[in-house]
Image (tube, rainbow, N blue to C red; front, side, top):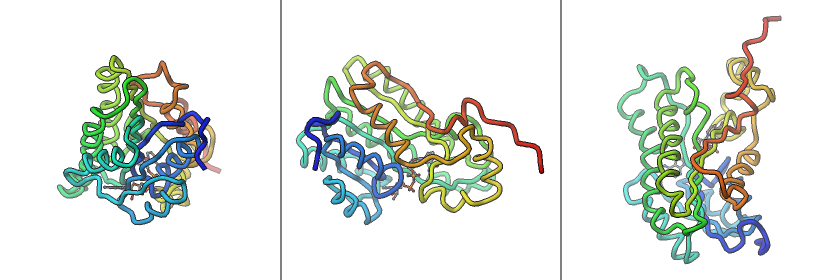
Length: 255
Ligand SMILES: NC(=O)c1ccc[n+]([C@@H]2O[C@H](COP(=O)([O-])OP(=O)(O)OC[C@H]3O[C@@H](n4cnc5c(N)ncnc54)[C@H](O)[C@@H]3O)[C@@H](O)[C@H]2O)c1
């Protein structure tokens, strides 16, 4: 049951990559606080997820040309307005540059950056003025260098720069543009790595909070940035990383 008194009552939102993980948690959080939400994802599970949160589901490959316009048109048809765009969909698991063939480079840049630019371009003319919000999901790997994930990191750095760029262009019109940079979050994207010794030593142990994050913990910050509580925040990329970027620990002594 949508909350008619919540922070997002009367607002309409698009959340991409909402079939699972951070996107699903974000769609649930926005819906709980009163938003009408369009959940867009290529995975078929998006339809059930949409039903579970009382939203509208759209199964679509966001990397395809024309997808951005299709997503925005669907939201406008369903809700008659658009207030919030959450650019969350993305793929993980890229490689060092020398091991990245043309297909891999194209896949990561198209999916994790170009599709975000296209959807954002399609959404901007329709976003509420004032009150519109764009919140995108970058990554700590798009801010600090981290070996072995070149195409992914470059795309995520592009999202961080898109955020600063558009913040300057759109704040005068009353649209706020911000991003989150998650550290390691427990989702399908990381589940294959979380148990490995390398991950424990390289990522979890250096994290001041000494644990991976949960999707809901990222969703809470996205919801803050999408809300009126963030009325004077523009162009920020907020790390949600247990302190990793700010104060990662050196490796502890063996033994
Ligand atoms: N999990 C982490 O540790 C972590 C860390 C930093 C950033 N991120 C970013 O957070 C976002 C969400 O990741 P997650 O961890 O929830 O991953 P996830 O794999 O659980 O979810 C990603 C969702 O995006 C969808 N998606 C991917 N490509 C798509 C496309 N072309 N069209 C439509 N849908 C598509 C997938 O189907 C999936 O439902 C991603 O952008 C990811 O890069 C995640």
